[in-house]
Amino acid sequence: MKHEGSSSILERISAPQQVQSLSHSEMEQLASELRREIISTVSSTGGHLAPSLGTVELTLALLHTYDPGHNRILWDVGHQSYAYKILTRGVERFRSLRQFTGISGFPRPSESPYDHFVAGHSGNSISSALGMAVARDLSREEEHVLSVIGDGSMTAGMAYEGLNQAGGQERNMVVILNDNEMSISQNVGALSSFLSRNLSHHRFLRFRKDLKNWLQNVPVIGGDLLNYAKRSEESLKGCFSPGVLFEAFKFNYLGPIDGHDVRQLTRVLEQIRQMSGPILLHTMTTKGKGYEPAECAPSQFHGVGCFEPSTGDALKSHTQKPMSYSKVMGRTLSALADSEPRLVAITAAMPEATGLDDFQQRHPERFFDVGICEQHGVTFAAGLASRGYRPAVCIYSTFLQRSYDQIVHDVCLQNLPVTFCMDRAGLVGADGPTHHGAFDLSYLRHIPNMTLMAPKDEGELQCMLATCLTLHGPAAVRYPRGCGTGAQLVQSPAPLEACTGEFLRDGSEVCILALGNTVQPSLEAAADLEQESDASCAVYNTRFIKPLPEEIADIGARFPRLLLVEENALAGGFGSAVLEFLADRDLLGETTVRRLGLPDRFVEHGSPEELLHQVGLDREGVARALRGLLGE
Image (cartoon, rainbow, N blue to C red; front, side):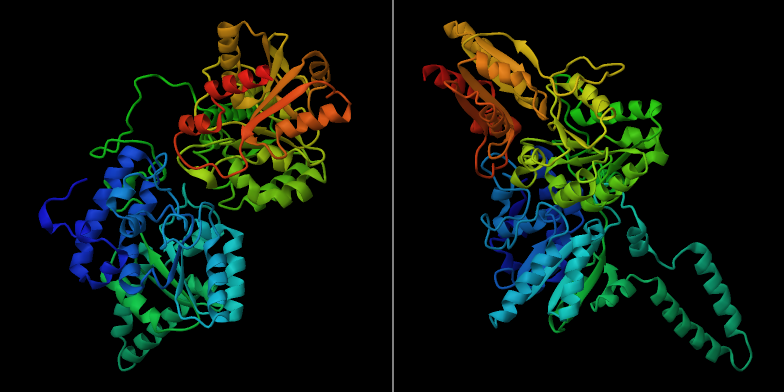
């Protein structure tokens, strides 16, 4: 977006330190310009709009008070940091947000000297800030360390582990609680209620007014009674204030203050600069501030694709897309729950994003949003399963990593029938390496008692969910982000025969063992190869990663060449499992085996098509691997 003439303050900003010289009125103008730029850019790139619109004034107040070149400002998650990105990277670089070879949507030290820690998963900012504060003190350096954390992230247990140690050490550091009463969706739980609790209900206000009038009219002692009542009210407020919680952690609690009043924010931050010990500043903000569509529907504008800035309406594709895997999963799970009263659904603050909104509406008493607490969610599911229920834990692959110990110790060790619905498995696109589901096959397949599956299309996903309900132990189903192939959905999904794959294409010279999202490009590559060279290529949809289909033994003996394809890290993934399977049965012999999967590095951000092409997992990449294998 181009600003008119020299009146644009944003155009004059070339370094974040320049914010320090701005007046309050100039910062208020700059806040409006930053919001226009964020809306303009995100409307064409997609991104996390509403959270960043809510922290514009807070960003300006922080940069006005603290030089980010000499102090450490850490953003929890990074959904809140777009204004910071503009001021530390420049407008032009910001316009490449989340684009292939452009800047990341999250804080990234390799990208900017003003970013001090990677933050793609929530709840880590207080712990990392404390580590930096301790390092500062051990090195006898002088710098301020600040963590900006949202109230949604404050539901994460790790945040309180950090508060506990920081307060116990009475360490000099600042935690800024950005409280907009939301995470991605509406916040849940007792903590959320406590943070938003106040004595402003209309009945209380009316009672207070009536009491004040009555006390003032009491002869002689009315004034003294009124003063006593005011002191008692302040004491009573302390019982209801979030300050009680944070002061129990030995933090000096300040607030809550208006997070959109840049004058008040800068004044308070200037005072905080002169204070010592652990400090928590509680700011109240509005998610989506300054953009009416986002203010009215903040959860819909948390993470968005391209949209029309003037209306907020999503830009519609000219081609009709199939239903997303998330929607298919949610609706299928909801339908299965109609006939299975023991089935319950669990999510970690993402009912809409994981497709569980339909389940929530149809079976509200069996739907549980645990907040941003994946570890708790898994053990909560284990408790349900121990009492005969069939919980389905629906979490993104990248976030399920956080609950690895609970999966091992609380679910698999006890062989409890918990189903893990792993959304966003594989490369997710513009959110980049913090959100790619690149490791789930590797960190799940070696755990005893686990059954692990991946569907080739939407109909097979439905059948796998039905299969999970027939198993007597834990199971996980991984599926990709976005739409599938458009396969016909199943009205009444039937369970699959356990540990069986299927030949989708026969051949004699080479066999592709594919999995999940790689099945379709493997079929296309095999057809291309046959058309161009008459090479005979079979394609086998493995479906089960653990246990592997016993038919793979026959495949290893029958085909001289095997290509193993997966959208997971090669180390310890599906290809490793097949090699181990064949080696343990002495079936490798003269068979030539090649693996195709994600490389041993963190894959950057970009569109899924660009990334799959880059790592060789699209139609062209599989065909290239086939040619190389046949050439050998």
